[in-house]
Length: 137
Ligand SMILES: [Zn+2]
Image (cartoon, rainbow, N blue to C red; front, side, top):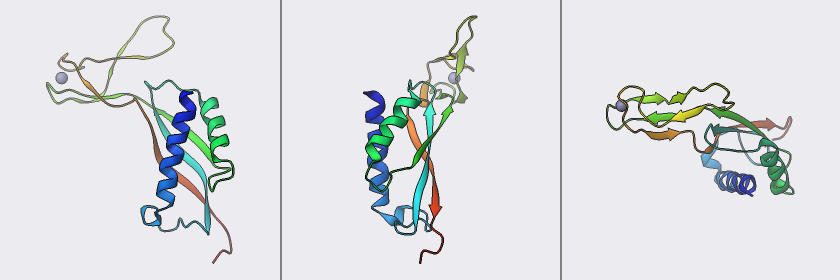
């Protein structure tokens, strides 16, 4: 299952970061605080069931230090870069009546050359919300 493997790779990378406290903001220490929320950015080209992802997260984190944490998913538009003219920014979209999805076109809005996608295909962790225990010292 696609969502399960995504959730698992987020879990693995977060655990790797938690194992190296110097990689985290100084107020995040394992004993005094707990991660409440994981903020994710989902590229618009990534097809994903949020429900399945959250369910997978709940299963994977059970019994770990991340148990009880929540995923917050924000969808971000596709960004492209043009090797021809150097354009970087929003993709051009196919505008058709009756389409429910925005379909990005992989040609440069400025010069028409084929562009590269720089953002919009993956899921990335962007921030963590940490709950600090009152009175912990
Ligand atoms: Zn261009």
